[in-house]
Amino acid sequence: MQNQTTSLTPTALNPGPPHARAWIITDGKTGMDVQARGVADALGVPYEMKQVTPRGVWGMAAPWGPVAPSERFGQPHAQFSPPWPRLAIATGRASIPYIRALRRHAGRSTYTVVLQDPKTPAGTADLIWVPAHDNRRGINVITTLTAPHSFTPSRLAQLRASVPPPIAALRSPRIAVILGGNNGVYTFSKADDGRFASALHALGQQGASFMITPSRRTHEGLIRAATAATVPFPHIVWDGSGENPYSQFLAHADALIVTADSVNMCGEACATGKPVFVFTPSGGSAKFARFHDGLCASGATRPLPATITAFEPWSYPPIDSAGTIAAEIRARWRP
Image (cartoon, rainbow, N blue to C red; front, side):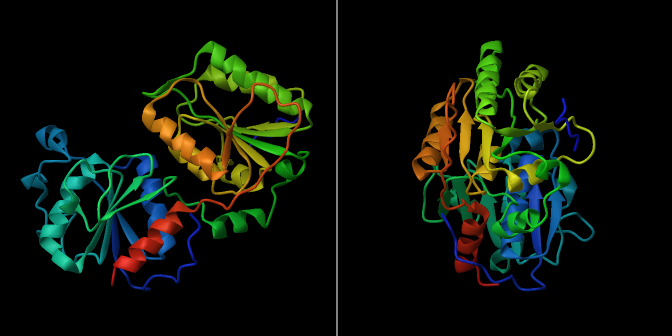
C-alpha cells in the first residue's frame, strides 16, 4: 500500500463435513475462481482446484461438446480420475463438458453445482446458480442479487479488528474508490473520466478522504483523473506495487464508490452493509440495467451524483450471496 496522503441474508451455516472432498472446476479466470471459492468456503468444505484449458475443436465446442479423448477422463492418473469428489462446483463455459462427464462417471455419489448459466440443459448439474438479472429459471435454478465471493461477514469482521496505520490516519468519512474499466458493455470516455473526477472532488470538499484502487481493466486516464481530483484531500492510491489493499479498503470504508462495469466488485462492495455509490460510464445494456436496478431497489446502492453537497450515509443488511448459495446447497445436498 502506498500512502499518498501528501500527494438475502442467510442463516449461519455449520461447517461442512471435515473430510468432504470437493473439486472446483474453472478455466482459471480470476473472476470465476473467486465465485467458486467463495461458495466452497461458505460451505466449509476442503477443495481441490481443477483448471481446464480445452484446446482446438474441443475448446470451440464447449460448453456443448464432450471432453477431449486425449484427457483420458476417468482413467488412472488423469486429472479427473477416482476417487470421485462428494461435491463439485464448476463455472465458466470451458468447465461444462467436465461437469457433465463427472456426472456420468460418478453418478449420484457426487453433488454437482454450476455457477453462471451453462447455456446447456437443466440436467447439466444438480443445481445451477445464476444472478437474478439473468433470465434463466427452473426447478434446479437458484438466484441471488449479486455474485458469490469470499468477503463473508466473518472475514470482514476479522479485517475490521485491526486498522492499518495509513488507513487509520485518514479522516472520516473514508471513501473506498474501486475502479473498473472498459468492457464489452461500457466505455469510459474522457467526458466520463471528467464527470467521475468532479464527483470525487465534490466529496472531498465535504470532508471525505479517499482510498483508491484500480483493477486490471482500469485505463490510465481514469487513474490520473481520480488521483488529480483527490490530491487536495487525504488519500491513498494503490500504485500496483506490493499487496493490493483492496480487502482492507472494503473493510474500513465508511462508504464506497464502484464503477458500474464490474458485477463482482459491486457485489463485494454490497457485502459491507455500507453506502455504495455506483458511477455509470457511457454504454450499458438491459442485463446490467436489471442488475443495478435490483441493487438500488434493495437499498444497497445509489447513483453517484455529479455533485454532492452533503454526505448522508445509509445502511442495509449486508448482501452475502455466497452464504445464501451455500445454504441452498446444504439444504439439497446430503453428503
